[in-house]
Image 1 (cartoon, rainbow, N blue to C red):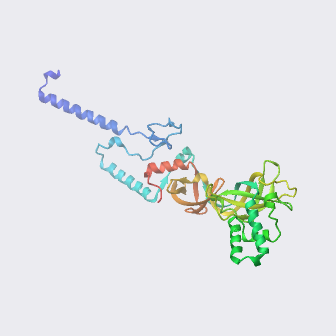
Image 2: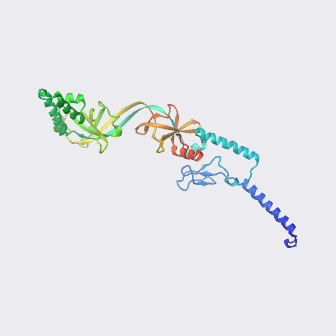
Image 3: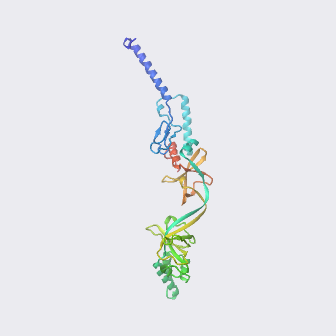
Length: 356
């Protein structure tokens, strides 16, 4: 029978049945078309419905777990599915509350996560300081004036002597060095003519960030291109009290052994200081993420769980960073792929998932 031979009523019934059938087919197809979503840990905005590599950085794509099904948002699901979804939401909120990130062993391997223990270490910080053999006519004049004033102190008031001594302090001498230089144990002419008695005076410049590590009495090694195979060993004798405001450096004054008087005034070189830092709580630099507002590290709380913690750091010693607070000894922190696990946390918990 042709459609033209049907009555309008029969034609309407057939069309209605056809529409219902098409709706059922679409619904069944939609329910069965759920696909896994894969994303790039480095570029989370790139997604795919199949495994592969990121076209931007060639990193292996990672399967997104528990992603919401956007395609079924307009279809009323059975009651049992609503209950399951409610349980999932509750679990996700728990993750947000304690900030623990679950990462399967497979995913840890795929993004290259490695961890290390937080330990106390005996570290040595090496500081290289631009240096020169002393040529200091200003200090020579100040020492000569003070030495003469002390010799003829009956002609000077106490305030004059105090002012001359204050000038020496401003030029970087300690009270003990002032006593040594003016007692006859040191000849001020060494500061302009070169070292005597088998020693040379070395002036070194260290940056503001390092001056807390430098101490009087600390060993120092001086090297110069004039004698590339020779080291001149000595100790720091005094540290200036005034910082250079232009280059933010502080001057160290050292004495090194030079029995053959090889070093000449204004000869340039480098001084190496080695500062011992025993029993220092430290972690690798790679374990630290600097957000601009704070520094964080990811602690492994279980074999498949990680938690971001805020930390306070101290000195940097080569590839290690001193930890002042936020971490405890024997905790385990992520040291490789730290950025990737942080990106994963932002995907799960949002961009404000870092501890405050």
